[in-house]
Length: 251
Length: 308
Image (cartoon, rainbow over all chains, first blue to last red; front, side, top):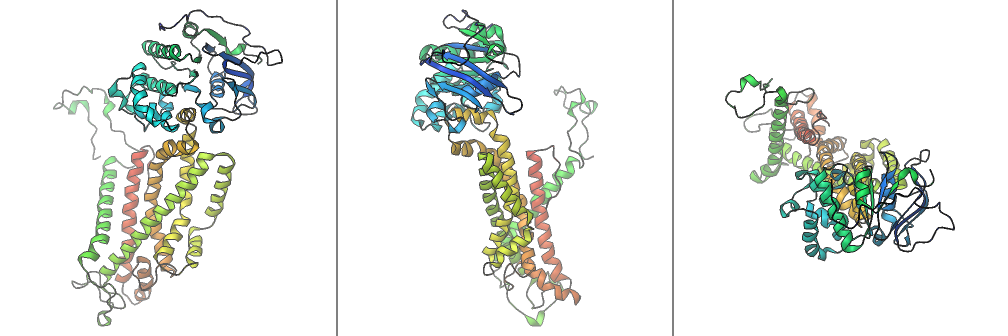
């Protein structure tokens, strides 16, 4: 079983009613890293995936979101990362309300969230070497100069040896690729990390290593975490509290 | 047939390979055996190389005047002096065919490049932006595609003085539609990949996503479309020239030569028509064969025909 080296991950406070339905009584929570209020979203208007879901992740807090496959956890994670435009509701990141999604979101707001996806094969551009993959956000945001200082340390903390960095995704294993994807998500020092089933495809030792890397980063930077998954044991050990997707108000 | 199935009992010489199960049966596409395909690729490559070399080297190596008229020797059948014979003005057909091939190849390659660049730009724009832009652009493409290529090409040529460049413009501006469709479809399938999401989350702009992540994924398909377009362009040029709308009549082009030879054909002279025709058909088949091999490399499951 993974043994995260971090602070009290075993203390879980499973809250049956995590947040009240958005209303006047809800406190503004200025420090919340992520605040979703009444989010309705989906891919087809006739079959919405989220009906007014609300969720708050406080600054520095680790929240695990549990639910069966296909229930809409990933959609919620995508909305939180500003990658999917909801039909209704508000998304606030670090106190700033998001008015646009995907490319319409301001770059500095988008980059406050780091995302790790479930399938590293699909989440990595097959043409880039792992070094380029990790450094890509720095290049995209015009911070090329930071690459030499940032890349080796980050790769080391994600458990990637120097030889691996020169390889392309098809030349490494799923676990190694997911480590690179985690490093890529951390390279811009996000305040919130969204891990969408990050470890679902990986074995126990790799899972432990990745969780340890996430916790090391959070300890250093005080970042918040939204971990999505269906592994209750893992998330209850990893996160400060877990939320059942079904319990998100109201369905 | 040419590639025997390596049965486990037939391989006593290569004992270290532990492959007892008949999993070593070569996967073969439907239809042709792999040997025939390899032969087709080799023949196509050789013919294409010979064509390109002839077009590049012969005019430089033999600085003879392809326009030299010798009315005393008009319509001579093939002989040692004139291997392909002479046309109705006594011009050497071999020399004129090679010069015509130069024009055709130039038009084919440049027009295919023009069409590919336009197609990538339009298709990439539609695919990367999506939504309303996509629908609008692709409907415009449909409108263009509803007009026959040749008709549209004639329209373009008619606007300019005759010459090579109007012909290139005519081919390039009418043949980008298929490339645009291919590129748009590929871009569409790529832009929903999670790695595009990851790039957006990492702060990439639209432009950066398109250039860094979408375009490189589309290029193999677009390159294949470009190669397949070279034969198209050669045929289009020949057709325009044959109709008297393309390359001016005094300039050797396979189309103008075929057109000029029609009269002699009725007089029993077969050679002025045969050679330009062969020079159109053989290189285009060879290039199409190469493109087919490339397509099978990209996607071996799809068996490709010689597409013209």
